[in-house]
Image 1 (cartoon, helix red, strand yellow):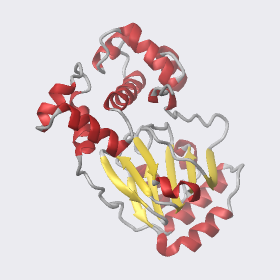
Image 2 (image 1 turned 120 degrees about the vertical axis):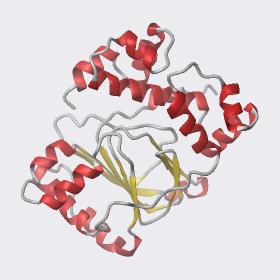
Image 3 (image 1 turned 90 degrees about the vertical axis):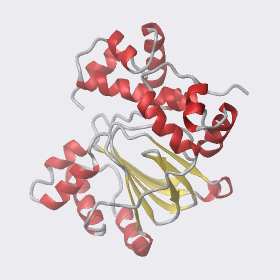
Length: 279
């Protein structure tokens, strides 16, 4: 069976005329690194697995609440034996619009701003001790939701959270985290597995095999995702040409870059810059 390139699955969610996407259901997991242009809130109700974010691994278990800021690469992998019972509440939120509704609630507004910082660190917190309260809270809010209802949901949710946003630090052990940190530093360069393996003091076959075992992905797929995410940032926050951005993020040929970008993002680089500059 032909493997579908991972870059076809980038989830750049556009909420269009709505402020929030809200679902509570049993679901398959997203077995590839991806990111969103909005804040994602993920609450695990049933099931176990691993969430990979910020080059770290976090244990997924019932009662864990994850906040993934805009443009933060992350991946969720549920244990195969638990897939049939994996249930989660997931919220994608246009935080810019909701902030306007929180003018009279400065603490909630400030926390939302912290959690929604573009490309900022993820936050993970255990909430199993108040699962019944969270379950009731989420059951009270069904789409469609207007800004006032979303603000009310966030005020109630944030009131249950710890005062300080420090969260739990995930594990940075293992080859996958080392590879991700190295790629963050070297994604602009032409990639050679031999160079990466030498830097880590391992054989190329070991690095490739262990990365796939720990993440379910090939190194090249993750690198491609990383480069496209960086390209999106440059398109939105600079006036550099597409050719210059392609070279900056590690693509040696601009035609190849445009093709990869269109396949991964669903738009050409210039279309993406035009359509999302206001985000």
